[in-house]
Image (cartoon, rainbow, N blue to C red):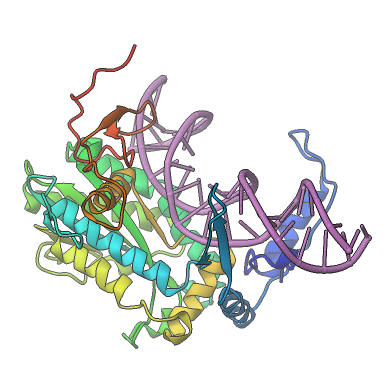
Length: 364
DNA sequence: GCTCAACTTGCATGGCCCTG
DNA sequence: CAGGGCCATGCAAGTTGAGC
């Protein structure tokens, strides 16, 4: 167990894993680095990690941050970690906001969101890996690392991008995704062998105005193939998409919908279904949470487009709400942004979502 | 379709300064 | 130099534009 300053256990690793790191650190380094200090990181048991995780979470209870303005007025806000109700509710609100921006709908603040795309559609991709490949049980962090690394670093996301932008011919602003890691075995769903281990859902949102969904479905097979190829513990038998009706079957590793409602409500149900206090969650969720907490992995990540859409929804709500000082609607005032993504962005929230890019000329 | 470095963001507290 | 008050940033995981 790693004890530095009460930070998270960094890894739940095997002793062999540590030895590799240790030996490498002792040998001469190639790039001019030299070792001044060695810190041993021991493997921890899953049970110890779970205990440390829950203890850390409980430590936040009653913790306040105090703020003050220039006039000396002070106020306090409760500090939270990423495992409490506040966090869950925020993710839940983001899922609903995204659904509104893509498909239209009423905002909590009263206004009506206009669907941004002509024909929004979604695809849900599910990536799994065996926790007992070849009959031997894997340390949970190695299993989780393999899943995420395949997607983020070993080309699965790149293949998804190629599929959307090259094979389907969409522009970069006509598709986006929400990646959500989830535990196996919630509610005794029969995935016994992998219970408490993680799997990934990648919710892909795209504008299908010029596309035939019957043709789109098979295009995602290359993404699944890439995952099976890159992820050491993934097998094709667990991702067998043959004999799947992508538009009508929802339990395969590829599932399409001509609309955003299913995806939105799926994400919202997942987020909203577990908004209770952490200690009240099922043990499978807690064990799974201990993996992410100790390994410093992110459970959720979104592409830029999706993040911008959510930001814009919040911006519109602030403009409508009497509780906010903001009076300009999203996009009412715009500024030029030289950074990544859209050039013309809202002056209030910096998001370029649903903003006509011809409204400003590039400054000299 | 691959690669990579620049860029963004999810998640999170460390450390300086003053007083006694 | 211990202890309390107070303030703002850091780390690294993950995303993307652009070159090839």
